[in-house]
Image (cartoon, rainbow, N blue to C red; front, side):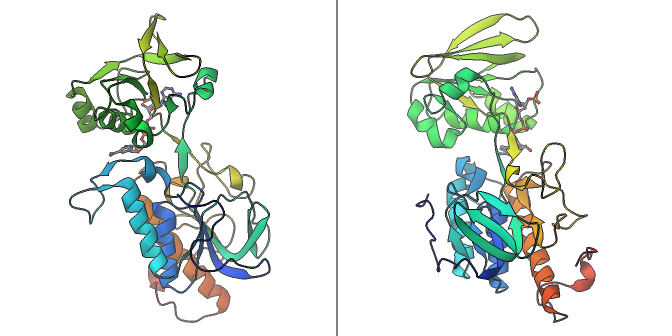
Length: 341
Ligand code: NAP
């Protein structure tokens, strides 16, 4: 993690300068877009977020990313992505975008008081962890309530923890936690899992993991820190208390799109809409890629693939703005051409 506002490589851009490309987001999509666009001489500025790296920063072993036959830790992989983009001249601003204005050209992006302008923007802001939205959960956040097993599991050596959720994240977090905790209770609101069978089988096969199904978290108990979790069986209404030092909430994610509300079209769940198979949004010059768009596949490899697509789409858009010069990256005939180019 860097220092907030630090422009790690390259120079800070003056207010009146208009860049060719700004990339918002520092996950697999953003860094892949940076790699491709840097190699296409678009000199991208990546406003990567203060907590750059995205969801892979809270993922342990990644075993399914091609090119890493022995597997890799998520944070290491993100550092590799970032370094590879930096090698070709991508600049990184380690801070959060606070506002955008896509209503006219040039497109404008603010980080606090600093305004950045560009002819094209790639949005790759990803998605963030969902909360249970219990007052007791929010009160004890950081004091036993957490959304990141990889970040916090080591604090629970020989302790008891509860994991909420029935998806792959919950199974993965529960399994990871068994490396530290003495007991892991997985609480899921149904008796069927959204997680893949192989992950459920692995969790079921781990003697440290116990399942409590058809149950919801009613309240997180404890004054200064988590001491127990009160569960309610959703069928019988019966409540039980499970002693716990930590509550790991692993119930999915929401797209990080509030910045773009009213400017970029999104679906009912807030995911950004793109045109056909392209990364083109409803605003000319603005492209979207990765988990901020994709709620189906949501993998590092698919996000990276979309980041590549966004860079190619942006490069093509910028080339069209400049005139009919040859596009070195893209076979024109192979890409659908959105009407507004
Ligand atoms: P997910 O698949 O959307 O699962 C979320 C789980 O949380 C569901 O079981 C859901 O219950 C439960 N849930 C949601 N809101 C809740 C609430 N308010 N209270 C209690 N429970 C709630 O999310 P995910 O597990 O984060 O996975 C997201 C995607 O990433 C998936 O495609 C997954 O396959 C992938 N992934 C893969 C791996 C891997 O392969 N290693 C690891 C992590 C994630 P319901 O089932 O009742 O809706």
